[in-house]
Image (cartoon, rainbow, N blue to C red; front, side, top):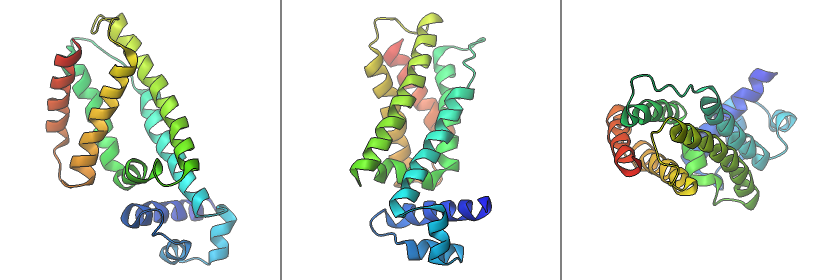
Length: 192
């Protein structure tokens, strides 16, 4: 049974990413999975319910990386520290490209309820970023005079802008290593 639900989720990810929320119909999802419409409703109450589950899946994937990431600084300067972290996240975005497309392109603008779910996810993500920020201050990488909100917005904004422009919108073979190197350079210069 869990496999069927996962098949529906995977079909939803693929179709929402390709067609967008409003242009996707449950009939397309069930056709892709090869199930009856009634089977869809055993797992999800509606298309909206499926979409919200995708937002929650995205949240779980990315917050797990933050929660399991070990902030290690042994023999690393700030640039290398950021580069290693950014590589992890870019690889995750690339691995979950369609889910990233859905969240970055659709989740906030489509529906107020989706926006509310996205805000909850952002609050959790910003808490994890605050942990990073505190760690960087404690290790002497950055000054405590750097405002957290601007640090977090700059970090997330740069990362998601690169993902949107390079990975999602244009360059399917975008060089993750090069992007992590360049962004870590900018972040290092901007906040050190």
